[in-house]
Image (cartoon, rainbow, N blue to C red; front, top):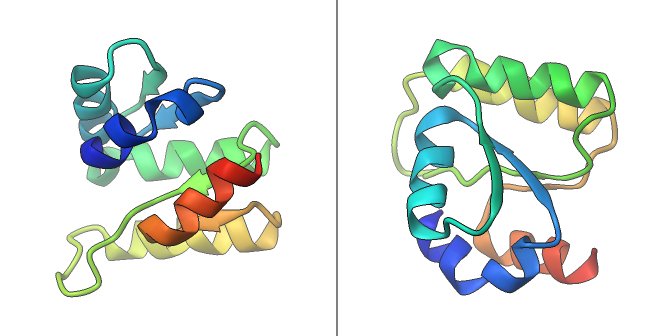
Length: 106
């Protein structure tokens, strides 16, 4: 995610970014000028915090990179988050190619 943020910093600077704690901290370290709000770590409830924000209409797009070749320790939370994005019809990217299309489109 940090490489993606560095490469697309100009486009991402147009957005208010909300991220799970670890990811948000890493993005802020790599791109301190971005507007990033880190929440709790994913396994400690950060995914659920983002899910609640989707349900209340406070998230307009979801970029959530996953490694399809690795087991996720909080797989249930990730599935719930993607389910909410689908239910609330939020544009969602789970890989870099889709994320690039979303940020270019917006």
